[in-house]
Structures are given as structure tokens and as C-alpha cells.
Amino acid sequence: MNCEKTKEKFADYLVGNLDKKSLAEVQTHLTACPDCRGELESLSAIWTKLGVLPQEQPSSALRQRFYAMLKAYKEGMEEEKTKVFFGQAASRWIERFMPRRPVYQFALSLVLLAVGLGGGYWMSSSRPGVKKEIATLKHEVNDMHGMVAVSLLKQASPSDRLMGVSWSSRISSPSEKILQTLLEALNFDPNVNVRLASVDALYLFYDYPGVKEGLVNALTKQSSPLVQIALINLLVEIRERRAIDALRQLIQNEKLNSRVKKRAELGLAQLS
Amino acid sequence: MDQTSDNRLMEEVRDEKVERLAILFERHHIMLYNFFLRLTGNRGISEDLVQDVFFRILKYRKTYRSQSKFTVWMYQIARNTHIDHLRKQKQEVPLEEQFEETESHEVDTVERMVGEVDVELLRKALDKLPIRKREILVLSRYQEMKYKDIAQLFSCSVGTIKAVVHRAIKDLRRIYCQLQGGTP
Image (cartoon, rainbow over all chains, first blue to last red; front, side, top):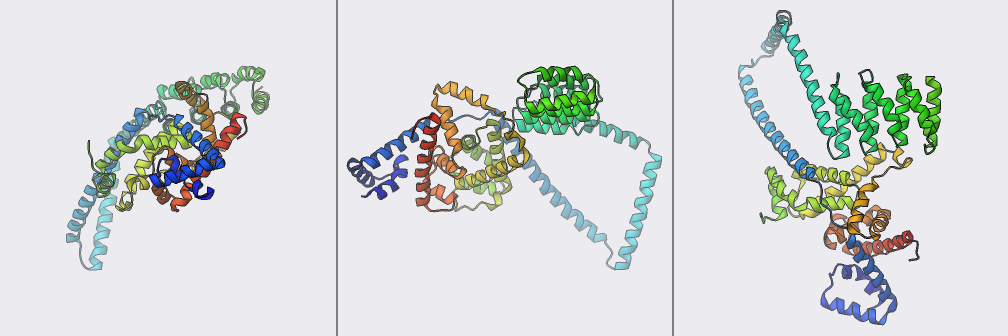
């Protein structure tokens, strides 16, 4: 066997995939050829070294999420089935009452339209309670968005937490707990994308008590230049004069990123 | 434990018994997680990608053909999921590269556990391999996948895969030595 043929077998040699005959052939060549021997030795060394990288276990959240997804998917499938079933039954039932001649069909649709309009008018005028019910429902949906947002923000996966931030920005009037959780995310979340998203979400709620103070306090705690710049932009835009001290403090920090420093100085000029 | 073959289980999932996917999940999710971990180096993202793969298996279950091996089909989906992730990442965080803040602290703990200085270097060297070579190397070294199956996955000949593995190991050794500051 020549060098070329031998080298073709190296990949199989590494995974232990050579039959006895080929292995013997390779070994015979190796004893005679120091070049090939050297190459195979160095390849084997790194191949073995790769074994050092340990196999890791995912967190238990992965299994939970998978089973939740599977359950939701199954429920979705069943719902789909019943929908199709009821849909077919209903259309057959309606078919029986449908007049055959187009003129009658047209007349029937006019009658139905009139009934619909009249009914709608009657409902809105005679039942003032409906509006109240809708308002309560809206309030409940709002609360639910809040609950989902808070629980997502507490997840281990950064993408879940990001989703939590985006849920929280759908809320029209956030509870104190959501604002608190968002401020916590801004200050303590290890992922810079989550912190950035929290700045954007908090921008929507800056009028609520405690938020402006929280934003000012966060400024000196941040280490990521991206978040620092986003915060300065926000504080300047809402003309928060209490940020002046924090900005001065920031500029004095010698380790500060040069671009952030420039932005902070500009911000200081804009505010004072 | 259920001894039914992967292919049989997937056929059942395809034929609307979706709860059978749970067995396939239990059999393969750890391997899949480690596959992504070696490609991305990030635990959170790897878990998200595993979840995404199983969701796609459900969504595209009707396209599964019994004659193809389940793991080959699954890794095909996994590769697509990873490629989509890379595309999305490029669009979403272009600034990330300007300001470094990686999650390197996660790696540190593993390193401490293994007690080897080499680990981080090896991981970095692996990261520097082009994506195709890295995928093929990871599949053959860690996922215990046969060259024949990898060839099917990449739609090429077995000989090509063997040559890529050979070259990938050679490149890896060179990069590793460079990172060590020595000569290859």
C-alpha cells in the first residue's frame, strides 16, 4: 500500500472502523514509512484530546418545555379535529335550509342583514352593562399579560426573558410588580440583550412612580456600553434632570468606554 | 423501556400518534443538546435549538419517509435549525461584535470541573474551524454517527466525508498549536 492509499484509511482508523485486513495493511505501511506514522500519531493525539470536552446535561427546564409543547400541540390537534367535525355538520345543516333559487337567496340575505343590524342596535342601546363587561375583560387580559411577563422574566433562558420583556410592553397599565421586575432585569440580568430590551420597555412606562428614579440609579450600575448609551438617550429624551449627578459620576469613571463618555458629556450639556 | 426502533416510532408520530415523540425526545435530546453546544458554545441557545428541532419534527412529521434513518432526518432538521439561528443572529445583533460581552463565565465553571488548561483552548480551536468541517467533525467524534450516515446527511460520497474528517483534524491541530503559541 502506498502513502496515498494509507492516508485514505486514516479517518476509518480514528473511529476504529477498519477490518483486520486493512488494519494489517496500514500497520505494515506505517512501520516502513516514518512520514505517515508521524502524521497518524499527531492526528490520533488530537482526536483523543477531543475526548476531554465533556458531554453536558441540559437543565431540567428543557424537558419541561418539551412536554408542555407536546401537550399544547396535541390539544391544538384535537381542537382542530372537532372544529372540522362541527364545521362540516353545521354546513350540512345550513344547506338544508338554503333556498335553491338565487332570487330567494338574495332576499334571505337581506332579511338576515336587517335582523343583524336591528339586533346590534338593540343590544347597544338596551344593555349598558355590556360596556362594563368589556372593560372588566380588558382589565383581566391586561392582568394576564402581566402575569405571563413576570413569569417569563424569571426563566433561565435569555430568549424566554426577552420574550417576557416584550410581553410586558403590551400592557397598558403595568402593576408595581411588573415595573419592579423590569427594573431588576435592567440592573441584574446577565444578558445584555435582555437589559437593552428592558430599557425600551421602561421607556413606555417612565411616567409611573419609581421608574425615573430606577432608571437614574441604573445608569451607574451598568457595565455594558450599549446599555449605558441607551439609558443616557432615554434620560435625555424624557428630560430627567436628576440624571445630571449620575452622568457626572459616570464621566469621572476612568474605565468608561470613550463613545459612552462622549454621549454622557453631550447628555450633560443637553440636560443642564 | 420501549424497545421500538426510532424509525418505527417516527412513523407512529407521522401517523398522528404524536405522544410517541416523547420516547424519541428521551433518547436523543442530550446528544442533540451537546451537538448544538459544540456548535454554539452557549447553553441557553442550545436548549432553545433542541426545543425548536422537536417542534419542527412535529410540524413536518408528514414529510418523514420510512426508508430514511430517523437520526439522519433529525440531524438534517437540526442543521437547518442551526443555520436559521445563525442567520437570525446576524440580523439581530450586529452591534454585539463591537462591544464584547460574551458569556465566557459559563465556560469557566466547566473548565474548573475538568481541571485541564487545554479544554478552553481546544474549544476555541474548534470554534475557528469553518462551520461545515466543524459539523462533520462533531458528528463523527461526538455523535457517534457513521460516515455513511453523515454522507447521506450532507448528500455527498463517503469518501468525501472521510477526506473532510482527515483535513478537519489536521486543521484543528494546526489551529490548536497556534493558539498554544507553538509551532504545529
